[in-house]
Length: 226
Image (cartoon, rainbow, N blue to C red; front, side, top):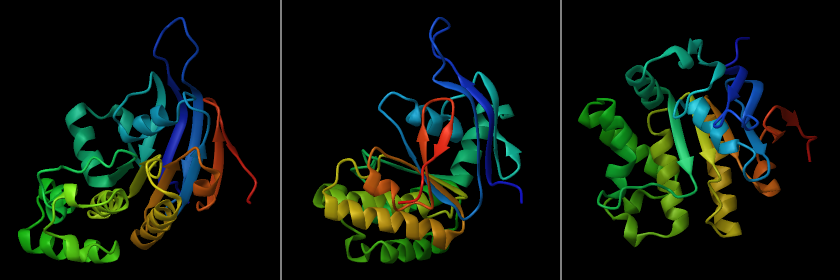
């Protein structure tokens, strides 16, 4: 089976006289998988996610998503591919404060040109799935941190992305809310049939994934279950 995502010998170096942040990294992820990546601060977890997303470009190696090599695309094509195929959930939420909950969730669909009726139906379905249907017309300032993170998850998954990337999505949340968000992330990845990567410092968060890796910049080393 061809992997959904494949990195081959990826190198990223920010300074020529310093060791590379990513040093010949290879990795494959299948459709339906939800994996966690752990590692110390500064080891390169965010750089890795940025390379996968095409927000940063490697100095060597390739990144392939659904058989399409992202590293050879120009910036415009890469932006479109990212918009179509990826969803992002970050620690800082990144919801737009001047848009309602429904408009925040529907923004990716609007950018992709979905017809209005389909957008409305899809947003309503996503808000129901994350338990925020009653908050559709509220503004982000009226909501809790956990609710904001659920908006971010609904927005990230509204267009049914092939790949979900979550970078420390529970770092600002209390343990109970974090557990809810993690269960929602995993459940939504499985429902949508794509794949997900969770970057985290938390072993409890990592334990919700199908596979867990320790990252040292060169290798993603599988950690034993449990």
